[in-house]
Length: 148
Image (cartoon, rainbow, N blue to C red; front, side, top):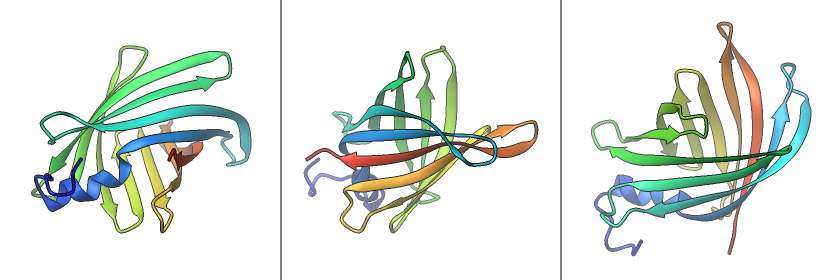
């Protein structure tokens, strides 16, 4: 989106995600050790009205293809973001997130993410955790690299 057409400073902050990313996903065992490695494509596109960012995921995880869509919006009152993901099994998940400088956090009822952007904005690394039996357990580690 043109830098002059952002609706607010919150939209401008969210624009760090806009574009196409090549993603490496490393499954994590309950003890945090690395498991299988998969590849994905993440594409973040501003919707025509410029108020929402659409996130499309296309991943090959083992022999399974996983595709989902997420729509991200601005919560101007909190300075954060809200989103809903639409998953391949027909379920949805709601999240709240924040981008503070180079730190990116996402929180949901059963999943959460803590990530960090590189100084040049070309790489995002982080870890997803999942709530299992009342405990937060490592789920996957991701590295997104911006396609240029």
